Length: 446
Ligand code: SF4
Ligand code: SF4
Image (tube, rainbow, N blue to C red; front, side, top):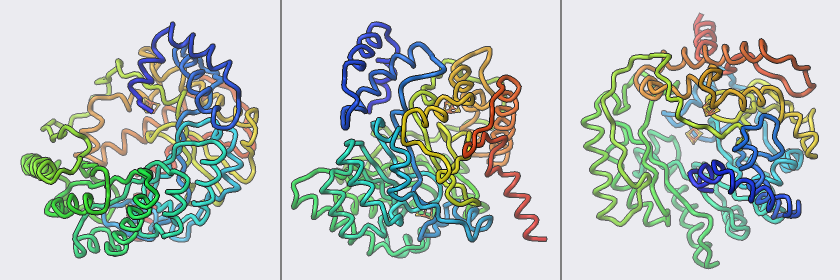
């Protein structure tokens, strides 16, 4: 759904009132539920209600906690170091049915998040079939496509799975093996087959896009990546700027944030080459590096940024040191809850509302767009220096984020009295803070 359009619609009193009336008239059934939910949501966003009757419009679920690759640029190395024998936390069809209260009303569901390969989940095809037939939900997945089997491709085309983003950070066999640790021939064969089934069935879905995060080690790979995109039926190549993290490239300064002139030259070459080859690149307008100084000013906040995620989005990521548990949040800045999905049910609306209208989410909705009462994590999120710090001073970035997270929970507990609910634990800090990582690393080295 177009986010800008949605924000515009939910900012007009006449439109939201009409939408609410139409929403109330739409029967709460099968594939219609998601439209009813969107229409009603506009009213609760406009009124800035803190207890709401709409459900999330978009949901993200990481359906497993492991991956068959060991990409050098991925934080999976951190996960493997800290939790080498972690539970797989596979989200089977039974878990999807347990989350049915809000999946039945969601417009879109994304299978991504964390360092994991969603297609390793053996129930993936069953989940797609179930959710498409019953609710017609839009679905997308982020994958390395190495285990995209023929059977799964058949299912995805048959049920109109919507979109696949393939991690394709190198195009040659050698560079792919070195950087992504897998066999590119297998990936290409899988994508070739998917293209064939789509053509045979005369269907456009699933739409395939390549994801290419530019950095020094893959800069020479772009011509082959763009050519393969065309050859394998990808509709576009998403060009991202790689930035650092806790991974195997950490100390190698591969990010072009350290040499933005060269980075911008490569970006220009990519866009020119793509145009000549007739390959679509996302974003359509090249987003160049800009030299900015990395000074953190905690008051450099852009209060005009309006965020609607506490009304519209919910995400579930695996807990790496506990079985059958998810961290739940509304964005990538902060995890809010740890839930045990084998102990709690969200099959019925009333059960789900215990989570969705939990005091933590009420606090979020009350403070996210406030100037005088903005909560610490949203204040950090809206800081104009945040992205620059993230790219050039990751230690500072992590320290500021972890501190803001702690302050968020302290403020929440100062302002709200709430009773503990079995199976839903409110967190107190970032469960995967950099501090914890460094502590564990020191312990292991000792
Ligand atoms: S395929 Fe994705 S999740 Fe797996 S190691 Fe590579 S980047 Fe990480
Ligand atoms: S931290 Fe706050 S402002 Fe940022 S995305 Fe999350 S809810 Fe929105």
